[in-house]
Image 1 (cartoon, rainbow, N blue to C red):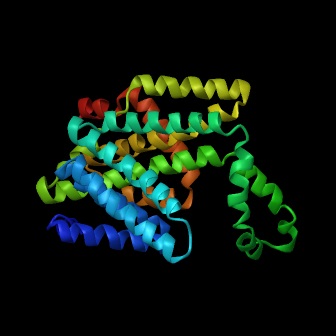
Image 2: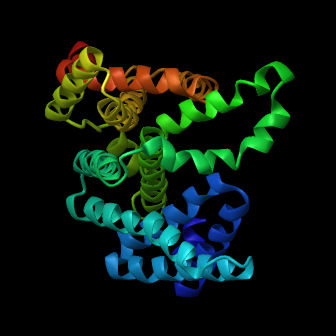
Length: 296
């Protein structure tokens, strides 16, 4: 895919348009259109990233008009999704630092949560109509006993949707950057991405800030603080993953350990995010990788 994407402007345009169309049918596939924009930005600069962002956005606009929706919805959805990828890929290209890039994602995601609550005093009222649209599908999946509790479930989900959305968006952006950087390494620097990824350390200051937020949340149960913690855990999870890959590499362990880790992440996503993020936070103080290197 990466070689086709980098073969020329026409191929890049086809890839971006096709991946955008596929993501409308299979939303998780949007990670590939994001990665395409990021790779173009990494290799050819933010100007080209903007051009292909506008191309992908135009595709969404045409689809919106075809299904008799307003063009504005396609423009907003496209720019909100792809412009951050151009910014983040540009920062990664300029700094060549995952640590700074992840800190930026953490800061932007936290700022997004705070800005949302500043604009919307009632977050539950904002998200509830969107979740209500899923009610018929959820009713079909529930037993008669649980259908009566569906409204309560939707209300609870709406209350925490801001933090959930911000954390999911942060994970999506990081995954897209990882795929783009891996593609770039495969084409121009074979093996370089693995070494780069295994060195991720977000830093002590961010770790301390997150730990303070956790203490404040335990004492006050402030919802906004909890949502900021959700974002922090989502980002620090990737340092935990980096640590896991580094340990397997340093100790020359079988790669099946990593396969098992990813299976657990699929089966128990929330628990594994918390566990990996916890190891990521501790690693900024304990430096497990250096301790293993010293023992070796």
